[in-house]
Image 1 (cartoon, rainbow, N blue to C red):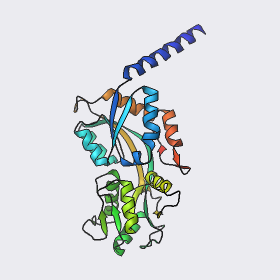
Image 2 (image 1 turned 60 degrees about the vertical axis):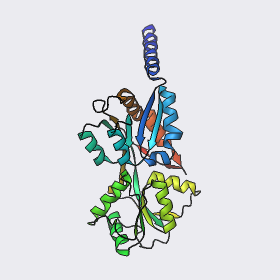
Image 3 (image 1 turned 30 degrees about the vertical axis):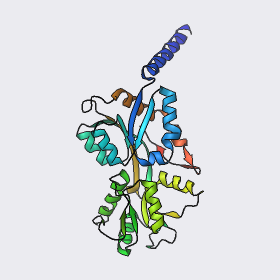
Image 4 (image 1 turned 120 degrees about the horizontal axis):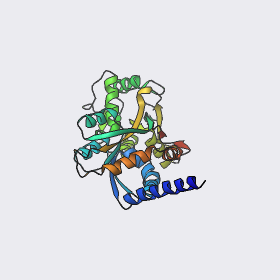
Amino acid sequence: MKFMKAALISLAMTALLAAAAFAGETLMMATTTSTANTGLLDELIVPKFQKDTGVELKFVAVGTGKALKMAENCDVDVVLVHAPAAEQKYVDAGVLMDRKELMYNDFVIIGPASDPAKVKGMKVVEAMKTIAAAKAAFASRGDNSGTNKKEISLWKAAGMAVPDKAEWYVQTGQGMLPTITVANEKGAYTMTDRGTYIKYSANHDGNPPLKVLVEGDEILFNQYSALAVNPEKCPSAKYDLAGKFIAWMAKPDTQKAIGDFRLLGKKLFIPNAK
């Protein structure tokens, strides 16, 4: 019994000393607009991470393309993004390392309730072809974000070039919520991650003007992962803190908190750290 108590005290002291070593430090992260728009960061991750570790987490919410460039420019210590193919290129280039899958949701095609191109219930590739054939208004983020990259891949999967010269195709160059606003103003379709759509719905008391029309295809799966900036590429990068954050995000209690984080009673992200 005495040995067990001593061991527990030793473990507790080790944990306290480890927390103290990081206390008062700041970790800089680049992430996607969806993790910020949904409130996941401000309401859950930032305060919980500081409470658990003593480390202040600061973040910049941009499209995944810009987040990865910030890592390449050594402006951040860690990224939380959702474009696996793009992420791998930066890993191969030695910019990022220690990729850890943490959570997912999915993409959906939304549009006016009147559904002018009549795509409701279609498979997503068929829906993209139908929207283009009807020349129905479509609002694209056009910002090299993870969502924009996925949208581009869907046009290609439909056997089409991205219709970026077409009059009915509007590129906003903005984040997801502003793009949804533009789509609503123009009576257009757009593609969004489900978490941001739930936030948009909550902003309209659960009755948003744009409705989910296409969903459920395997191709619409949307994985979020964290990656540390390689200190060999960026000597100023706080690799130890980045590793601490990634490990903390994968902890069972953090994963549970992410799964429990809801709006309108709906999960915004589903944890899947292995």
